[in-house]
Image 1 (tube, helix red, strand yellow):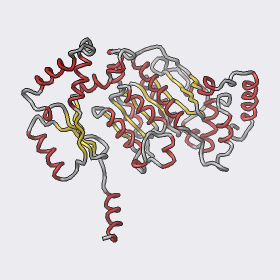
Image 2: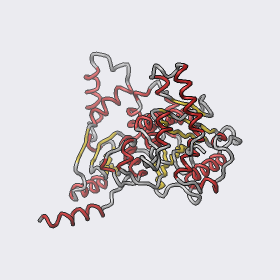
Image 3: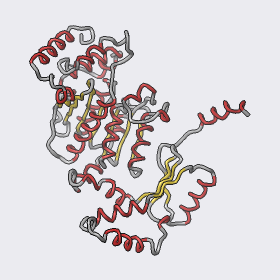
Image 4: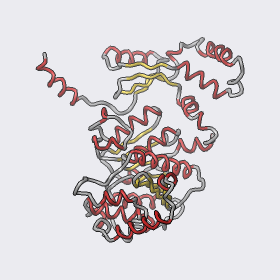
Length: 396
């Protein structure tokens, strides 16, 4: 009856969905019985089994000299017949269930899965680098730009051990820059990000901090971490992050979008514990002072940190309109993706002990793609705009 629709909607809203995948080993009766119960209950709605193709790729990765020979498919067929001689394919590997999508997927065991997943990285990322990248423990605080970082890490086969911290839920206005769909509206950002990462690598180990970071839990967040990514808006918690990073001797990487561009900051407390917080760009600050800032105060301080000379003209114009014609500082999806790629690059370099900028890098599409950007007239105009901006209420 139509009158029951509201009841069904309410029941659906109350239903909680896990944000962690479940694994089934069908080589034994216990796993088979458990999976069978899921089918009986109607929990599984979709089944994906591309296991033969996975094995074809695995065989090629392990035998690259055979891939381009005329008999490769025949050689693989013989190999494939052998591996399923004693155990049926459906009982091999792992079956992983994603509760949020009601989908069951057949995949290779972890070592083979990672080998195939990262095969196209070689040798842009070599074997040893890939292992260090994957085995690194990475903490990400803030999952707006931070989610782009997390996805970039996962795509490249990095950060098999993650801690994600954010207290917010996904809102419609977030979807201009966060790589997810409207089916995740209202979902905690940490769960939204974890689901996406698990879909890329279900073997990932992820710990969630849905309450965000604060004085009480930040010590636990830092336990066992090799590096931290700071993408929070809360400047007071940013300060706490640097206190802990200095104490634990680990690096902090932070990126801010700036129009279509990115500002990447690297603080190497792992190399120099005397590194000034925020490289001194905010001046003398304290947790207490930063904790008292409102949205406009935070905007001013972030602008001071980025530097008015680096803030794009349209970003400056937008900041002046906050509370008038717009509700917050603007952010673009493209810039979030640039930041994600840039920070993931930094993480890989740091985990591998490789050369990396230890202060700041500006990644500017405007500089590289606008023919007029470096002309004397454009340079003079940007200086004039920056000088004017320094005198505005947004900066002072």
